[in-house]
Image (cartoon, rainbow, N blue to C red; front, side, top):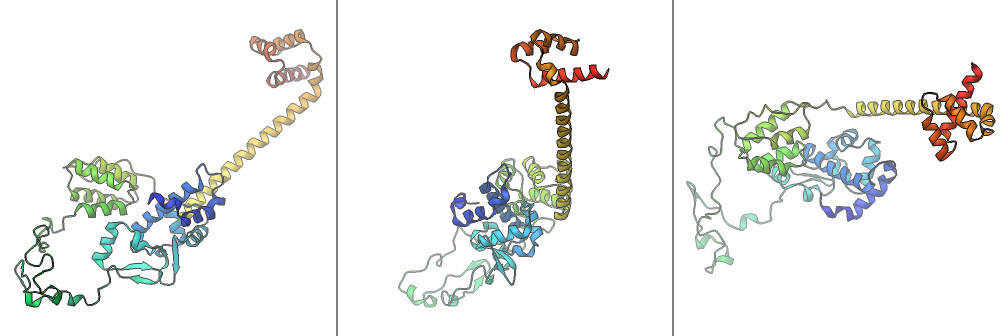
Length: 365
């Protein structure tokens, strides 16, 4: 997330919309909004690369970004603050996702020519330029060598001895693309590059993807070994979370088996309904415990009030020596503690309760 987003009016509008729902939280509404938006981007990258987040239900979106309240309230707030847009074709799309998507997502959209999902419909990745065929005529190719066009075939604006760049000879810094047999692994699968592996990790939800990639490179791990770990992580779902994948990549070394040395598996994830049921049961248990404690306190206060009514006047009539004698009778094993407290602070509430309970026992016996 761009650091300046917290100063944007859209962000401030979202803060105002959810502020009342953050009461009692130990973090500020601004921090909550930063977390919601960051996880919204992660959910879009993982589940809706074209920006069509509406392919998920409102409950699924709330689950993905960690919102435990009413999903409809969250979606309305994101739409009203223009982080999401409603549309007939995709239901919900991320506002301006073609401009803000990570570079590897843009490359993926361009490669597959799937187009972006917007509130106006599907937006092409790169619209064809008008009169593009008039820029340069097609030239025949001989083997892997491109023939430079002759002056007679160049556009008129270049016919006076000034050629466009890179038309007189091959560009040594940008060789022709490899043939279908180049860049293939022995098992027939294409060898991944670091950009593709970085996209795999980010799609898996690894927030610190750059650190994991840097660690793998620093220890000499090839990209295909990292991808093998990602594939094993996917095969074991829902056994591990994204943090487990990050930990494994950080500890990865050349020659290791990608199926070994994983941390203990996480507990299975709960569905939104199961999580709400669990949270409701926990709140009911806490409410019951609080009610029980309040009842015990009320009963104890009533008992102390009854003792005070019966024996409070008798204690008030005693002088210091009488109080010392009563303390020695109430606490025969260790009267010194209460006597010192009496000399230092007088009759405290704790000491008074000890004396009241002693008088009550004497009367009962």
